[in-house]
Image 1: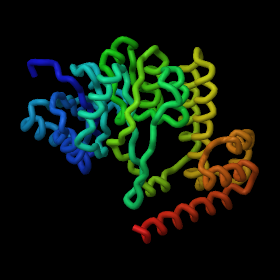
Image 2 (image 1 turned 180 degrees about the vertical axis):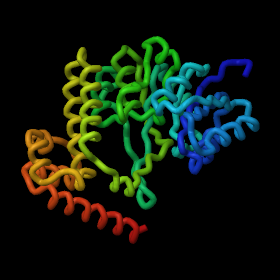
Image 3 (image 1 turned 60 degrees about the vertical axis):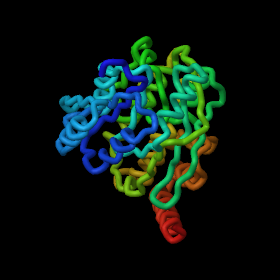
Length: 325
């Protein structure tokens, strides 16, 4: 590629052979054409690497990076090291993106003269899809930093970011936290004086999988979650307002995950003992009511009753959506 592309698109792949073709096709079918597409094969044991090479032979804009498995954060970092575009955006291997995504986001970023452009997205399942606004409370970077632990999600795939932001501020996706590595990197970005823009259009679909409710939660999972929260609190030590919001947000996420997935691990007394002190925080939160109150009362006692009631309600909700669909 003789001239530097306007946008670097990145997709990191691991055990994604069933979905990655759809993602690659979405990118190659974009109405905007001046981009490079970095496909990172993160030591995937399936055919992701072969699929990437297959596409690279057909389209010169595709660059394939094969590396030993190191996790999503290390794959993202490796891609950014070789990126050449003026702007970057990262799509997951199972994403779906509208064909006008790059064109509209680049147009808005250049018109608004921003370092980071945030777009809206769709959220739902196979039955219902909802439009989710990501409009910040203010475009000031410190306000967005605080919003990142409330109304603004830390996803990479709805944000167009200038490559030199990563370079200038030495932004790295963290290797030592279990999840939310994208949110952590976005927090690093918004800690700096970057110009933020907003586009009230949605291009990506975030699919909620009801089957995730069979996931397991135990002492190890809990300690990993606590470590993740503590890393965010440490990161934001010089930003007390954002730090307080992040601490509460991550604590609520821990209790929520423990409640939803921990029914084979926690007894009634254990759940109450572990999370009793968070009852007030839960009561004052903006959690969805049918999740808030079962969790709140579980912190007071009788966890298994409220957990069972919650899951029955979810199942009925899925059945109703399926019938309506």
